Amino acid sequence: MKSYYYDESDPSSYQHDHDSGIEVTPEQLKQIGVLYYHLDNMDDVNKLAKQREYKNRDQISLSSNSFPGGQEALKAKLDTFIEEHLHEDEEIRYIVEGSGFFDVRDSNDKWIRNKCEKNDLLILPAGIYHRFTLDCDNNVVALRLFKDEPKWIALNRPVSADNQYREEYLQSIKA
Ligand SMILES: CSCCC(=O)/C(O)=C/O
Ligand SMILES: [Fe+2]
Image 1 (cartoon, rainbow, N blue to C red):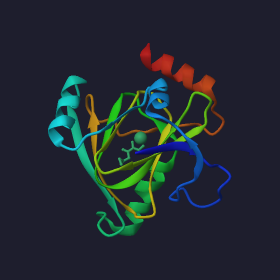
Image 2: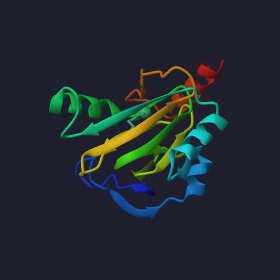
Image 3: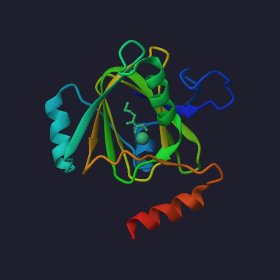
Image 4: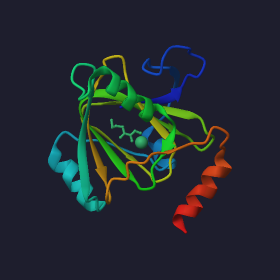
C-alpha cells in the first residue's frame, strides 16, 4: 500500500493518483486510528478478524466488465462510495484482487490517500470520514468485515460540516 496526501489542485478525476508527493507512514495512519497490514493468506485475515471479534463479512466485486446490473449500476455504487461518509463501527477492508483508493481524513481534515493493492488490509476506526474509488484499472475484489450486523447506511458528511459536527456526532453514538 502507498499512502500520501491527496493533491487537491489536480483537476483530474478521483480515479487518478492525485499524489502530492507527501508520503504518509503507517505510524501516522496509526495516530488517526487507521491500521494497515499486508497479509498473504486468508488464515491470517481470519486470525485478525477473530482477535478483534468480527462476526460478519461479505465480498464485493467492482469491475467495469462484471458488475451485476451493468455499467449504470456500477456507476451508482461508485457514486455512493466516493461520497464522504463514516461508519458507526470499526470495519476491515481486505483487497483480494485488483486495487483502489481509500481516502481518509487526517486530524486537520486533510485527505490522506491509500492506494490499496492485492493482500492489503485496512482497519478503519468507527467514525472516521472516508471515501473509496477505483483507480484507472477499474477492478477490485474486496472482503468487507463487520464486527456485528453490516450497517449499510453510510452516514454522509453534511456539506457544511466541520470537525465540531464530527465530534458531536461521535459523542452522540457513544452515548
Ligand atoms: C472496496 S470495499 C467497498 C467500499 C466500502 O466498503 C466502503 O466502505 C467505502 O467507503
Ligand atoms: Fe465506507
